Length: 396
Ligand SMILES: *Cc1c(COP(=O)(O)O)cnc(C)c1O
Image (cartoon, rainbow, N blue to C red; front, side, top):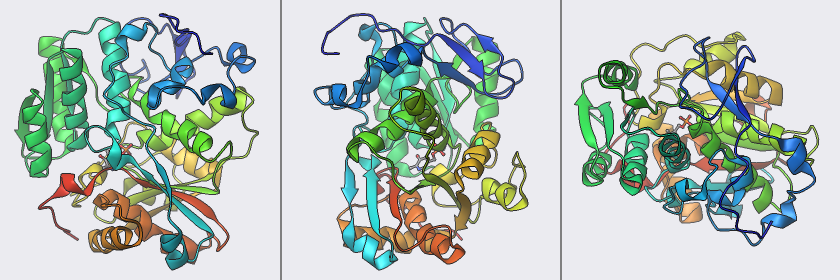
């Protein structure tokens, strides 16, 4: 696959994740008619004979190394700032402290704007530009706002970003500096979403909200491909993921299905662990009850702003992946997150986000539950750089 073709195969169509209904993929699409997320589908069976793990070794060191299974068709529209292909860091001291077999930290703090939101927004902005969108908008808990601002600046497309007033100040400074139209709202991300919806209706903005367009999840799915490639062609026993809208967890679960169709793996899957904040844990509550969908969480409160998401449009997809993988959903307090940010720091040299701290804090809980044993090899997601949360402190 060393050739440098201008045009890539791209997706074949979009499929509703709820009904299975399909639509074409070459015009701008939001949610399906059923009001659910679309997944992009590819001609994986024809790639099966052509795309092997060994073909990837000479490829570029960002998420576009997986361009054959991404939706952008024309390479000129790959809007890139060097996102993805983040290190998977073996963390033996953290592993022995936790009493598990092996721990790797996938350090997403090394993305261009310091969080893994860059993966999703790189894809979404690239594809929106390729399909002719001229003005973009999104509600955000913070980091998606900076990522959107960065990729829209790189693409030369105006973007409107609506975030809660108490978003950490380094993130607000970043969004402003990157030239986005920033609006602050006294409310949560769901309230910000209503303001964006109004802009979409009144001004024809294209909505980049999590899972409300089909391509942010395509960017996030590359984390699943990367873990497989970085482990030399295998998957870990467990993946511990801090869940807000759940795009990354849903994306990795999709990636594993694609990798099976490509013939890279069999039916085996890692256990998927969804970690939330005690002050905003709709997925944990639904999982404990055995529900297929999650109810909106009232009075969401946590300093892990990425986890302050009271309702997620992909709730059924998160819960399905957790259930089918034999995983679990667990909530931890802000104070535990904060303690574990410092433990990660001392044991590994990584300055984690509160969300990264949440994931580490959950491991002892998962062991206590019997969901992880002392031989388990796990990947923990540190989803961003602790620098983005300067001045933020635990709430509950
Ligand atoms: C957005 C965000 C999360 C949650 O990610 P989802 O894919 O929306 O579940 C976790 N951590 C950080 C730092 C984030 O910005």
